[in-house]
Length: 295
Image (cartoon, rainbow, N blue to C red):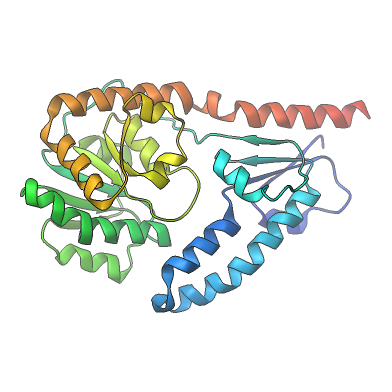
């Protein structure tokens, strides 16, 4: 064996102390995410708060153990790399591997008028927070300017609290869909109001790949390549009001939507095809394997 690759932390339990070069793909800064999530959930979090109180102590130690064992590390964003390798820690060679998108549209599709889509795995705390914030805080502001605006919440395993959002005016909890790409392509705009968490938001990349404009919070924008903002592929809101304003602008302006949608497709093609995204990881893997053969 020329190289062992551990995707995330759990497989390290089965890697013997004496092994070929070990490449650990940590991806997100899990310890930092647990800390942020615990602070956001608060005392009302019930069992989730109890679980996070354990994880926030366990995960940083597990990440440090992985750093000490690894011959190479990979992360999903520069921010995650900085969070894990901060405080002057000695670390093996590390790379940032961008998220990859397979299906990329040739041009934006004709959307359903005034349709806002939020898509995500509804099991996760950050996605539940975004869906709730969008339905209860942002949508009322949007509908004050665009009364026909409708929000569809799309994703697997919606808990009861998320399903109850469907009782609000303009909100439909769709749940799981067979074809996420087609769902995103039919949206006028998607929204990612990320308030805590780390890593690249795949929902943003998948939306841009379909040519659907996406409005994002500053936290979500920070994980993207600067071209996403410079090219106008995403619209960034720095407050709840500015997020709502960006959404209303896109709902109201067909030309702005098309320009933004085309920029999104160009951005994904330039940075997030599998070949481009995985190149740094493959180069590091080859370097570690070559080092073993040279011994």
